[in-house]
Image 1 (cartoon, protein in one colour):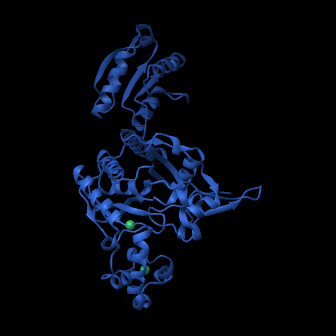
Image 2: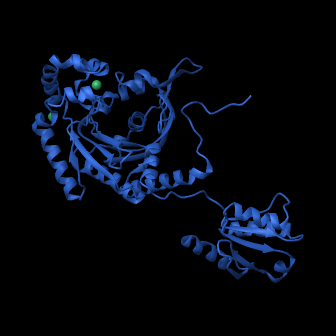
Image 3: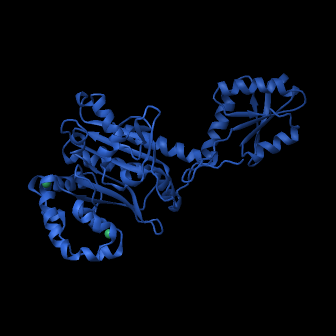
Length: 424
Ligand SMILES: [Zn+2]
Ligand SMILES: [Zn+2]
C-alpha cells in the first residue's frame, strides 16, 4: 500500500532545504542584531489558550483548528499561530520581572485546516517577533525597521510599508456606534460574511476583499479620523519615528485587526511585484492581550510572516536562492587504495573539509562520473603512488585546472576548496 503525505502538507527536499536554512539563519541574525532572543514553545497547547488568545469569534478558532482529545480526555490543539503560546510562556515564566522590554522571536510550524491552494498549506511555517512591556511608538518603529532590514538582507526589494491606527477600546467603541449607524442602511448590499460581522465586528467589513463590500463602504467614516487624543499622539509619533529611521510608509486606513485586544499600531508589508501582490507580513500592537489571557495589563506588539509566502515572493522577484549542499571535494580511490582513502576522508572532515568518497565499490571511472553528476567541484584521484608521495593533483571539475596539494598538511587543501567556494 502506498501512503502519501496528508493533504495540505509537503516535504521540503534537499534541493530546497538550503534555501530554508538560509532564510532561518538570516532571520535569526537580524533578530539578534535587534536584541530579540529566540523562544521555542510547544507544538500543541490546551484548546482554551487559543480560544482566548486568538479569539473564539475568529474563523481560525471556529473552523480551522486541529483539535483533539488526548488520552486523558483533555482538549488539545495544534497551534494555529505563534503569539498565544508565547504570551502563555511569558506569563508562566514570570518574564514580567525580566529587564524590559522583553524581545522574543520564533521560527515555528503552525497548523490550520484550510482550503488548500497555491502557497497555502495546512502545516505551514512562520517567523515572528513579540515585544512586551514597551508602550511607546519607538518599539513599533524598531520592529518595523527589523522587518525592513530582513527584507534588505534577503534582497527583496519590491515591497512597501502600510500603517494604520485602530485606536483603543475607548475611541473604538465610540467609532463602532458611528460606523454601525452608517452601515445600517447598507447591510443588504454586503457579502454574507460581512452581514455576520455587522453586530460583532463591523471594523472587519472595511477590510473585506469582496468587490461589493469595498464599493458599499467606499465612503464609510474611518477610525483614523476619530482617534482619541492619546491614540492620535501615538500615531503621530510613530510616523515621526519612521521618518527618523528613513522608513518610507503610507497610511492605509483600511488595515484592521479583528479583535478587541488589538490597539493602536497595525502595519503590513505589501508586495508591489506584479503577479504576487498582497500582504507578505503583518503585525500590530496588542496592549489588551495579556490581560485577556489572565495577566496584568502589559503592552505588547508583534508580527508574523509566512515563510512559504516569503519564498514565493523571493522566487517571483528573481532572488537567487542557495542551491543544495554538496561535498566540496571528492576523493576517488584508484587500485587498492580504498581503505587508506576512507581514512584520509575522516582526517579531511576533521580539518573541516567537506569530503566524500566511494562506499559502494565503484570503478575509478564510475567514481569520477559520480562526482561530476553530484556537482562536486574538486576531485582528488588517490592511488598507492599518491599515498607514498603524500601529495596528489587537485582537479577543479568545472574547467579541468589542476594543482599539487599535500596530503600531509591539509591547510593548503582547505584553503583551495574554501577559497574557490567564493568564486563559484
Ligand atoms: Zn484611543
Ligand atoms: Zn464582505
